[in-house]
Length: 104
Image 1 (tube, rainbow, N blue to C red):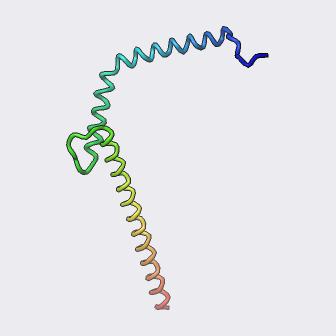
Image 2: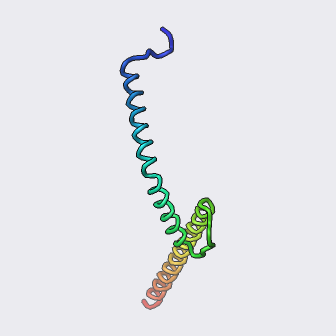
Image 3: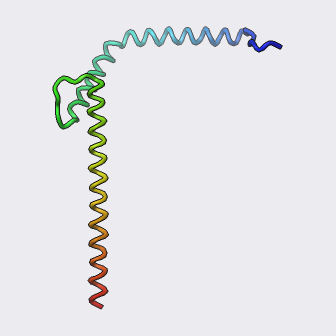
């Protein structure tokens, strides 16, 4: 009747499997650390090249901030251009309707 779970053989097997899979994951991670580091470095360099202003040697956190700021800038530009397009489409559409109604 206690609230403490009983220690069954299935829970012991789950723990053993977890330990085994964790050990395998640790081995894979340690063997690919060098590859991951170079891959991450390459990706950071590619990201740096996407930014319009290259501020030289940026740390990763500063690079992410610059990238986020640039994304916000691009989204703002797209928003403004969409509004301008809507404005001029509606404006030209109204003037065409007015011209047709005046001609009739």
